[in-house]
Length: 477
Image (cartoon, rainbow, N blue to C red; front, side, top):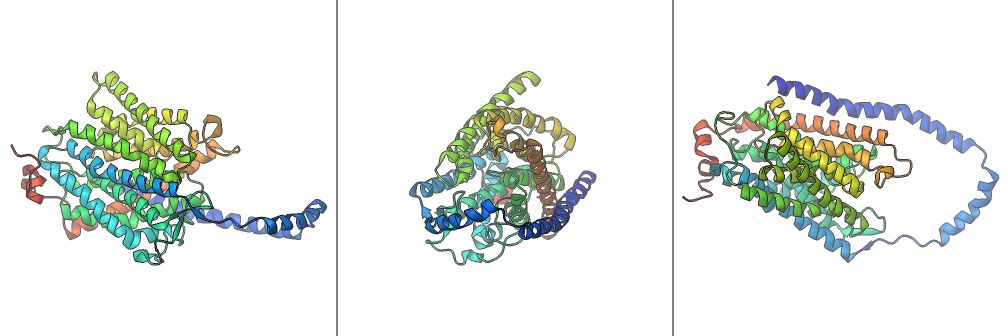
């Protein structure tokens, strides 16, 4: 518990101190900016500028207005990407997690992933989309589109190109899958011991108070981190760090599994785990390349980066296991694939292919340490290594995005791109996400514990959650 309170104290200071710091800096800068505007207005216009003004006005009058269009290729790609992200969660994530638990808990994990994803999908269209993607404050949107009010088949959503739009329904569905899989990721940290009803209550609270604000700050109109210039192409902070930190807090608060460290808790089916990891890799192309929102060269860049970064991470994890553990494992290769996918997520649209390989290779090695050395240091029973892979990989990828987005390293940054500045912005966004997620997760788990109770009784845990929670078994012997 001391670890939890120490982490929460740091988290609270970061989550709530940083926005105040940002507001103070903005307040200090405001008078300077205002003075600059006044000085500029008072200064006499240069002769050249005065001569050019009529010509510029005439050219502007003759230029045709930009007309918003909907490209059928973009629509097809975003809808295909939505299906791919759904495929990541169901069955990809479910099978990946299911294979890692003991056979007596196989169905409970499948059930948690499927029902949490479904629950969040309904909440997303009820109020989640409105709070994440409408104008509001720098921290959260508004309720102007509550229950999709005002959204029709003819309303449009923005892309990264002013003249290109998407049907708003397609954009809503795409972002819905992101929210659903983020909450489903967390269940791996407390697998095999948490009450099903408590999982659902926690998911509702955490989604509302954590996922939606972070999504708005990073991606929403007027979001604080978006305005600060944070780069997160497809969800390093919003999805992976967010879920990883919530999972770690849950591992502490739910407690260790009975027999942890004394009894064998080996995965019951690495075959299913490998199949699930492969499905995640396939579905992740929709996750990353789909985040380009248009079927353009930007999607192609994210596509190839997703392919090769993952391959590099598989190789790195395999090499690391061979060197440090004596034998490379199938579980390691599958975990390496997920680590590479996680790390390249925030960077996939702004780094070059060689930068993607470096990010992937480093992710394989660092996340191998995350599920071994770091896990021992933390002392938490993070059942399926949600923090060790998603949290650690997301942090690494988010920070390295600030390095390899530089044009000198093959990235797509502007000519005046500053690695030092961008790394600071990336680090700042990571700290905000860690702090916010940790505090909200603690509150959400505590509420679930008070209302329902987090953990199943000892006899039910020993018998397995498949039978005790759902009255079924995955396998009949």
